[in-house]
Image (cartoon, rainbow over all chains, first blue to last red; front, side):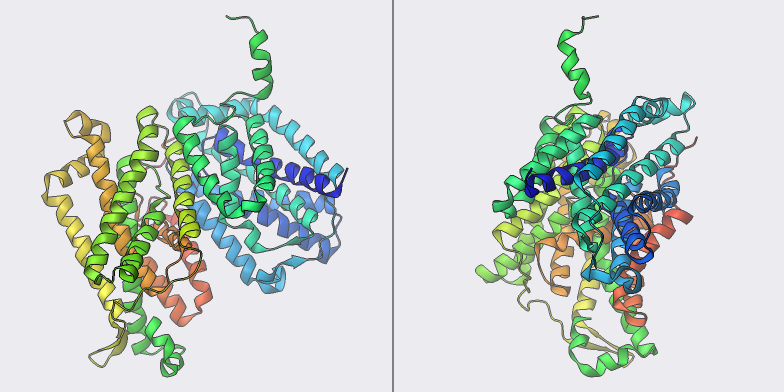
Amino acid sequence: MSGYTEGILILLCINAIAAMGVSLLTGFTGIFSLGHAAYMALGAYTTAILTVQHGIHWLPAILLGGVVAVAVAYFIGVPTLKLMGDYYAIASIGLGEAIRLILENWQSVTRGARGYPGIDPYTTLPVALAFFVVLAAFMFNLINSRFGRACKACRDDYIASSLLGFHTARIRVLSLMISAFYCGVSGALLGGFLSFIQPVMFDMLKSTELTAVVVFGGLGSMSGSILGTAVITLVTELFRPISQYRMLIYGAVLVVIMVLRPEGIMGNREFLSWVKAPFRRRA
Amino acid sequence: MRADLRSPSSIRERGDPSLATLIQQVINGLSLGSVYALIAVGYSLVYSILLFSNFAHGGFLVIGGYICYGTLRTFGTGIWMSGALALAGAGLAAVLTERLAYRPIRERTNVTLYLLIASMGMSIVIENIFVIVAGGRFRALPPVIPTAPVNLMGLATTSAFDLLSLVSAVVFLGALQLFLSKTRWGLAIRAAAYDLRTAGLMGVNVNLLISIVFFVAGALAAVGGIFLSVRYTLYPQLGAITIKAFVAAVIGGLGSLPGAVVGSLILGLAEMLTAGFISSQMRDLVVFSMLVITLLVKPTGLFGKSVSEKV
């Protein structure tokens, strides 16, 4: 396998991990985020600082990166997710920008806007693939668990689900924390893949991309999000020569999908049920 | 701000926390805040009717700015004519955005998440149309708005531009207030903000009403866009500054128009006082900390309706 193909596959795994996190939040719990790149940044910087400056092995460092993202998500989520409406969406923009500004200005720890070089390239294909498989297995079980069904109930009708005894605010916060963990790990792996990170890599455009991928794949479909990631990552590679039109196409695709097919590629079905459907007896 | 940066004597004064600097920064802050208010009010107006954050709002501001720039440069029209064209153009663009992107979604479902994502797509589209058509360059508007220093009764010096933008914002916000409180359509909009469906059942033409709301929001954003492109410069990503207007709307209470104005003024003051007395790198950080503090202490904002979960 050539280095280029391997690089794309690693990137695919990293993007898919982040997309699964955002998918749980946006697709399954119905909370819209415009700042998930911030959690990736937290994971990436925590891992980079722990491995480079404190010589900690990369595996616990990546997990700690995820944990830091979870802690921040908790502090942002508790006040904002109690409210219905677009409060979290706006708070997430604020959070994203604030974290990026802190990373840029806290020279002594993060080395500022010029970026953080010299990260050990620990993200090889087996590592990325292993993380992807483990996290995907966990996520696919999670969305069919009691918790996953509670998330969907909150998304579809939070009044009815709270009447049924679900603690909706707590479920929303927990969903945010899990999604922050996925994004933190994804950011940490990205740092190990590029061995260089920069605050500007985690700006609002990256956050938008994360959400766009999930919408494109289908809100409420985990396999759709992974498919969406694959399509967008590969199309990005193909469109590299006409990169100035890339974002225009992105935006237009988002609008067109919302107008024509708001359920995205997969709708809210999973890939397996889609394959099995023709063989199933009609009830 | 722009005028006093050029003269070295006022730079020396800036570090000195004297009364003159304070007055100057307060005026600057009110002026910047009033521009935020123009943007935040339109955004809040749309939110109060359709209950979703219109992220394409920043695009309307950029459209207004570029129309003003384009007509000034190519046709040599005066600022009044260009300004009027910019207002009308941005208003129409907002109506068109609503017709093309939001109405089909609105008619099919009441999931506001879809509207939110479509608006995000529209904001990317508008920004990148200008990147491709006009290029990513920073453009300065021709000197149509006076920026000469003005002395305020010997107390402080400020630029004519700051006073002008403050006065214009007051005029436009006053006109909006009159429109909302004295006209039939204003009454309909207030009714729709209370309950869109019921307003529709009472015989209000909901689609026309939403178009009017978008036109007003787009036109107000264009006024903000013209003043922002004089204050800073004009470039496709200028719309990103609406984030601060969103923050202001949250501080004031989402969907509340007086809240949007008060929140914007607070934000403008905080930003300018930070820039004047602490450091201008900190001003954005102060803005976002204020957002987080508001959400922690009083999440519904200063004038917000209670939207908290009861359970």
